[in-house]
Amino acid sequence: MNTLAISVSNLSKRYGDVLAVNNASFEVPLGTICGFVGPNGSGKTTTIRMLLGLIKPTEGSGSIIGNSIAQPEKYLKEVGAMIEGPAFYPALSGIENLKVLAKIGGIPYSRCQELLEVVGLGERGNDKYKTYSLGMKQRLGIAASLLPNPKLLILDEPTNGLDPAGIQEVRDLLEKLASEGVTVFVSSHLLSELEMISKYLVMLRKGEVIFAGPIHELLARHKATVIAKPSSINSLNHLAGLLNKAGFKSVVEDDHLLVDADESAAVRINKIAFEGGVVLAQLTPAKASLEETFFELTGGAA
Amino acid sequence: MRIFLAEWRKLRRPTFFFGTMGSVVFVTGLVTSLLFLLIDAKTGNADRGNRITREMLELSDGFTIGFNSSNGLLGLVALSVFAAQTAQEYTYGTLRNLLVRQPRRIRLLIGKYFSMATFALVSVLISAATAVGLALALSGKAKVATDNWFTNDGYTALGHSLVNVLISTIGYGTIGMILGLIFRSPISSISIGTAYLLVVESIISIAWKPASNWMPGNLLSVVATGGSPIGVENAPTYSQALLRIALYLLGAGLITATLFKRRDVAN
Image 1 (cartoon, rainbow over the protein chains, first blue to last red):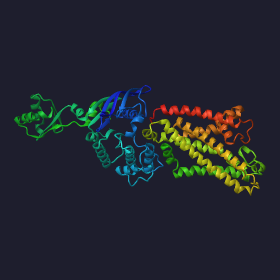
Image 2: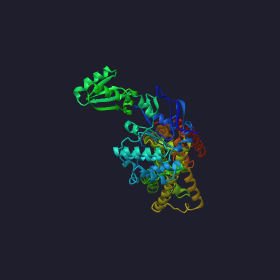
Image 3: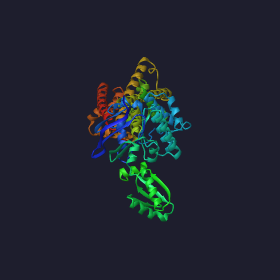
Image 4: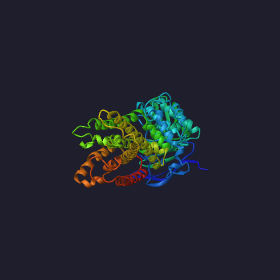
């Protein structure tokens, strides 16, 4: 039985001299939320287009829900997607736009109103698309991607233009869908949001996959650090000396020390401080964020 | 069928539908009105200063002359509609949505084509109704006898005109769709299409007359008029024109469809 929603192997796409995607290989298990991150121009959208059959890979292969990406007609009935933001007919209303896509996909019209309610556009469905705000357009794009009741949802920057409440709604929606067994493959620059909802992560840099796997594995790669903050700022250098003497590397940052150690060393650090006459006001492991790890791996590219 | 119906949802939106049909009524009305109202004018009452006499209008096919004479303008309307409806999928970025829901590209193209062809059919029917209605309304003022119109020959002539103008209109539309797929911009495809048909073909035909027998626009006019375009000498026969234009459109259509099937959708 197929357990992978997405599997790509040595996938490349070349535009003239530019290698947009270079030998990308990764897998995304079914039923998970997978973040897809990388700086601008790293090949995310090109990869998504290849997954959806919109462009043909120069080299390599892939499969979506067990079907080759060379035959998108075999799997796209089970895939919902929003690529490069929402794109609709300005002169048609929101619901008319959904009905165009529903008709082509053989999806009952009743699903259109239902989805407008889900994304919070229930009362604006009859307004023309051109009158929508960016956030509303984004919501309509999400509604369109949900039309086929997908097993796999591929979203490219779904929270672009949404206010904080809207971002939270999308996050809740994606988590709900994942809990119902839908695989969500989502690209976003909001790394903190992705960190909250993703179990898996695929990271690209200059067209190459630099990480693909469970997000906790990525975060574990980050250098372990413990924050040690003395009750008095005057003890900062004294504490640094004590720790260095005991073999710990540390640096002073503002009113605290960053000690290169994992959380299991906290007891020892506490003891060293206590024996050296330093009272600690804070002793906590510094948890690496996805954002920090992202910048570390991508060399600071935004 | 699903693509056909989905496309009609776009075509039937009131501003677009009534706007286009309004222009069809205006164009046909103008041509037919001038035909009857300027019947005695020395400057002529038809295209390029040609003269359609009272005797010609009184023939059994007299009431279709206005309709037939509108074919070029009807064709330009069809070209614009087909080109815009096709190219806007690129400019709006909606093509990617359509292809995600229907990845069989040729099927998508055929569905769109047939929906626009039926739209062209509606426009031709409206044009015919306008022309015939106005011909009847103005026949008294122009002192044109209508006895021969409502005979079997008259109805047959009307039927032939409908078919010929429809073929011609869809031909123009097909050119528009091909241009839309090639240029991927409504403005570019419409302006290039109309400039070619109105200017380039005329210049080439003036520079080298036999070339006009092979020009798509001229061939479509020959088809629309059933092989006897007004004021054109040594025109190809109806069947020659039909064969030539069919070969052109089939060849260009196949090349464009192949391009559409293979080309990356990267907008």
